[in-house]
Length: 68
Image (tube, rainbow, N blue to C red; front, side, top):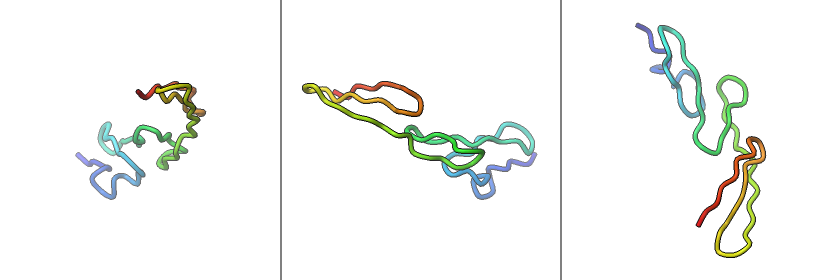
């Protein structure tokens, strides 16, 4: 069985996931999104604070987060 990920991370910027013989997909670390097949780009993040909590959201996915 050939695992493409074994050689140069399959060409993926962050993570190469082996699916089947000669098949793979690239994934990105949290806070990044796949741009095309192999490159990861940083998500745009907006942050604001009203009191002790820091809130924000990722512009590309519209996911909201609160950091306490």
